[in-house]
Image 1 (cartoon, rainbow, N blue to C red):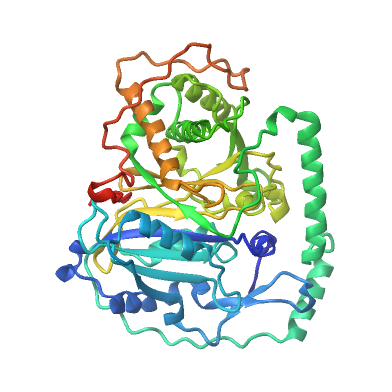
Image 2: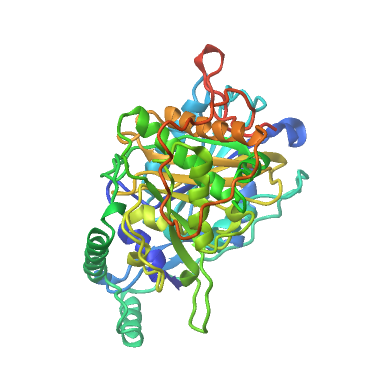
Length: 520
């Protein structure tokens, strides 16, 4: 029996009827590398069953304290049923990318049963019209509640279910498992009273936490309004979200993002990703006639140095609010403006997309509440001011992975959104590619394919500029924290219609979109 931390319990308390803390990992596989070129559902089920013992959360469910006097506990589920959690579905013909995105979004949006272990795996077949994948490819959608997965557990789950070789070994017989008895209500009450004595200042009941959250929110809003009114720029994505999710994706080559970063001395791949996302946001809102004159910003997670014996895991997380330069037409100036801000905060890792190896799912904190991470018990982490979106890294595997011999060819994620923070970019890296996947709701983003086309156009414009003969441009002085609007009449680089780097679901013959999955 293990009690949820204040941080993890906060994700449960933040759930609403139209917004939950589900995180869905999306993995697509090429069956041609498997023995016989075929992976059957029964073999996947047996494979998962053989590895249940490696991660306790697979068989753990929530046990709430009577009267909600304390945070819930993880206890063994005596009625655990593997076939309830692992499900088998197929897309109807033609089985194209758009159908897959719609199905994945619907699965992600459905709340998990809080009376069972908080995870589900969907094996999705029928991916027959993803033109850049071999016939017979299949997908795994791994949906888990954020309260059930800490940073270490998220990476462990991915590695636990996969091998680093296509060799398929006969799975050993499942180890006998005997669930521990469920604690009584009296036992849980006694523990809550003991915890209250040992930690009298910690707010444990949802009612007390809600009051504290509202107080913090009012304080932060007042500070932003009085001290930084120019930062409170809102768009359509800063409104109430619906229960309906939309998801799409675009993939790019890492080496070409590295070339884009070289447009500005000292810029990182992470800076280039932020600038490209800013260009997509600019293009989308401009097409709708909704682009504000003031620049828009994003919240992105970074590591903060931790000193002292009392430093804990959560205090390592820091949120950096980055102006995306959406008011800057010149591409190089936009990238330079982003780099100035990240460099000022010490985000100078040459591969800053790997910063979140220890906290890759913690970025969902802001997306859950639309307020600030301090409300979910992140200790000494600073409150985050308002922003237009979240751009977060979801750590992927560093080596090619295999499931029953089938090679993983695509890795991405659908992230949680909430009222006030209705747009999240999940950035994953796998197989020498960077995959950027926006999550939103269909009322705020009725055309996700159009939005990801703007993402591709933004990338191609930067890539065309990076390939053109040009001397590197030094970033502006560090004291210029706010990006500067380009001079009137400055022309933006022509967009490149070519290039194979951004190979998301483009239109194919017959009107079917291409696959966003990397080519095998």
